[in-house]
Amino acid sequence: MKKKLVSILLIAALTAAAAAGCGNRDNNENAADDKNTSNQENEAVDNDNGGEDDLIQEVSGSVYYLNFKPEQAQQWKDLAEEYSDETGIPVTIETAASGTYESTLKSEMAKSEAPTLFQVNGPAGLAAWKDYCYDLKDSAVYKNLKSDDFALISDDGQVQGVAYVIETYGLIYNKEILEDYCETNGAKIKDVSEINSFAKLKEVADDMQAKKDELEIKGVFASAGMDSSSDWRYKTHLANMPIYFEYQDDDLDTTDAIKGTYLDAYKNMWDLYITDSTVEPTMLSGMTGEDAAAEFSMGEAAFYQNGTWVYNDIAGNDVDDEDMGMLPIYIGVGDEQNQGLCTGSENYWCVNKNASQDDIDATLHFMEWVITSDRGRETFRDEMGFVTPFETFTEEYQPENPLVAAANEYIDSGKNSIPWVFSTIPSEGWKNGVGSALLEYAQGTGDWDAVKKAFIEGWESEYRAVNE
Image (cartoon, rainbow, N blue to C red):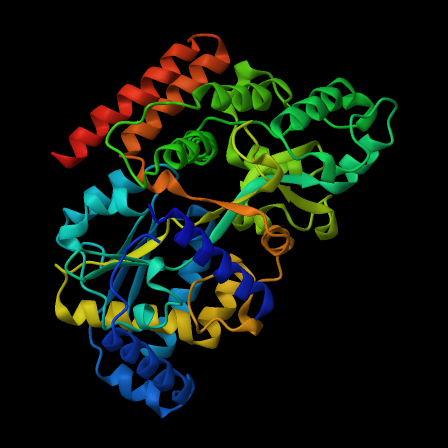
């Protein structure tokens, strides 16, 4: 398994972001020469000079991007409008509703005016769309990648997808609330740094929940909403933990049949989220991602499972930047003392090879403009808050994001990042089955055995359906 290599490279990329994966291929001399040549060309081209104009004159098609991230929908539209104003190349941006990307993509790809630019979430997502993917080996986005581990590369060397953002998630916490808790009588810790295991996290959370009135909070954890704007945090991101540790035990990087070795640990963390919460478990079906973000940003909850991408949603309210920290998601498994945050990508750009060549050329130009122009890089930095795997994003184009800073602190301290293995989940159907079972368990209308069944049997059946 190559999980150690991938983890090291992800760490290297984030470390570079502080200071300044999923495919495999031989790094031959020709590939290295191509990248070096591209870098020299990029350095020679001024985004505001005639070289750009010459390239634009050769492009006559249009772009249709089906965006995956609802939280960046307007930002993509604004950026596309500026690109079109500058180049004259039409760009359409459509955004799938949260949790519906796969079904929306299927519907849009069946139309005569199909997306020219779409995305997959990793190797499992690519399986359904590999026959639609244009080979990006000669593209600027590929040649500017820091490492091939941020590309999806087929066995015959075709570059089918390129990651455009690297992200980190964990337990975002309010430092001020934790400091207030440490001053209470009988506090289980003197400093948040003592929370370095599930056992300690549970001990602290249970005590804080009992003292929530004294701490003037509604609950320890922001609501674990299970509508489509929020449930991915648990059926995907939390589920990553038991999947990762099972893979680690069995030296796997994917599987056609998950065993569920650590589902009891998964249950323990889910139980903690729904009991030491701002709301009763019976209310979770109606709670949204916006509700959870608001609870945390208004100082009503001490912890909030989410990632670096959520900073813009919680900034500027009652929690100051200096009071935002992140902890690993501990589930009581592995070397918790040295555990870091969850780092990876599920955002891989793919170009539709069935589009006309003019539209493919326009799409490749748009992608290049996004990662090389001042406006594109500033939008990624300031509005989207992205950390990217591209060499064009030098130090001045890194986001000022306290959650990214927290992620880098874990890396600098030598903690072991947890890779995003949820990209190997066989389908969106599997996630939905697990999510429904989690909600029914929380509401008391189902039991944990149903979660296990959805997790284990659902994996096998969905894998078989997708790979038949």
